[in-house]
Image 1 (cartoon, rainbow, N blue to C red):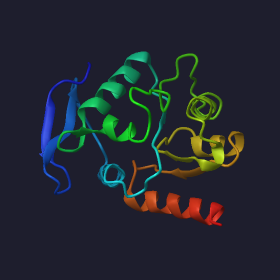
Image 2: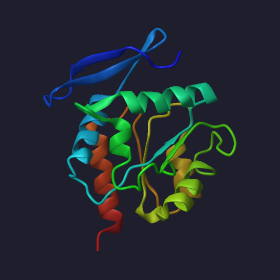
Image 3: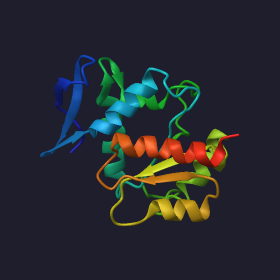
Amino acid sequence: EMPGDAVLGDLNGRGEGVVGVKSGRDTIRLFPGALRVLQECNEGAYDPMRLAIASSADTAFAASVAREALRILEVVPGVSVRDVIARGWPADFEGNVHIGRQPPLSSDKSRTHFPQLRDLTGIPYDKMCFLDDSNWSDHCLMVHQNCPGVVTQRTPRGLQYDEWTALLKKYHDRYAD
């Protein structure tokens, strides 16, 4: 079922906003670490970094649900996840959001999502980082093997803040002058 009823709650002490959205019997929420990272991105803590999404939602409907949830869930009151993902990109640009596995996408993000992200955004692989929470396939390994230069970090319990800082350290260690 498409996301509908909003669940209001505390946004890490930054006010009350939409912390969840009902989709059928499920409630879609951000992991606390993901919320913290998105709040820091919204505040410009990592500028000029820009964000993108490479998700292999398993059906076209699941991809639609994900896109709608991004528009509803808030990072701070009045600012959605999608708003934060759009920071630094031209208005109405969608080339940084690749959700699904229907053609031209596939379940192998390294063969479809990442080449498209590179081509549409103009960001080379050695300027990209990738976080992945899949417990079924090692997308980080596939991206590492097929998209040379992308720095990866597995997040098997959903994004935890320490995994974010580990990713940033890996990137810095690899590419620092």
